[in-house]
Length: 364
Image (cartoon, rainbow, N blue to C red; front, side, top):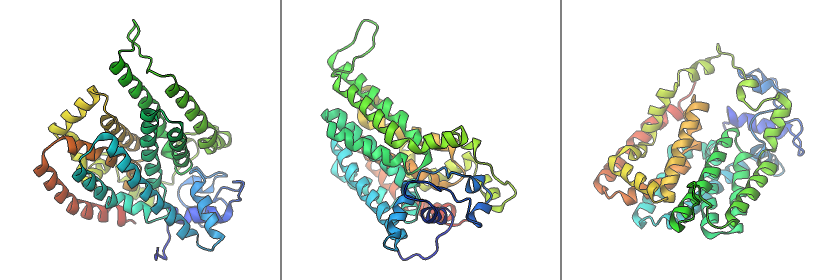
């Protein structure tokens, strides 16, 4: 809260908040002489690609002459929301209390979450709302509740209006519904001759339809606007880079292989997912249609998507880390190798500090 230096994306969002109108017109940095000269063409285009929720929060903060405070309060509120949903998730998954504490501490001190939520960034906050939305949707299915469905849809809409890459979360929602339906089918023996499933009650399917309509109308408006402006929603269609610029040269050295190694060293608890005992827990969970196993697959899916789409800067992976911490406590709670996890947690302290400082803090 006491920082006075605001650079990069923070400077862009503050400029957007100053330049844009409340009806979202003039949502561009093209008129800003400094930013429009940056080596990525989107800064001189007529419509900025990132959704407008954070600039709107900053604009509201301008009314009190405290736009930065408004953004940081929003980010810290998101972290609080994550802790609440983690506890809801672990109660559903019957995670032991001691591992809940480990999971909360891991999330609280996660370097990428700390880096992103102490700046005017959207990487971590978008990931937080995605993770909370998935947890809420699980609750809505298990409780057969429209209230949880409305809350989950609200969280997904917020995520989609925070960061462009939040689009990758939509398949998780649909696959989660099918996963639940398959579990009900196995449990109740509701299957037809062809082997397909009905998923039990029709209310859950109505919830999914209403949910998708809400997202399509409230969560994707900016993406429709991008399509009508640039005739594509693929970033390659409206963003080009000046490869001779020093910063672009630096990001080009951050290859996929390099950043997956850095990401693994930054969050060594990822190695839990390849431990034989943990793999058995996950496979057993998939066989039983356990939500913990589904969350593991969802977090792996998000990491892989970010590796493909936006891998040049390590901070982008902050969008995938909240969902990982949702399933982490479930895995270690069901795999009883306590000495291994104690040593891994200790190693994590050193690794996170060293790699986090080198890759997330030190920049050209």
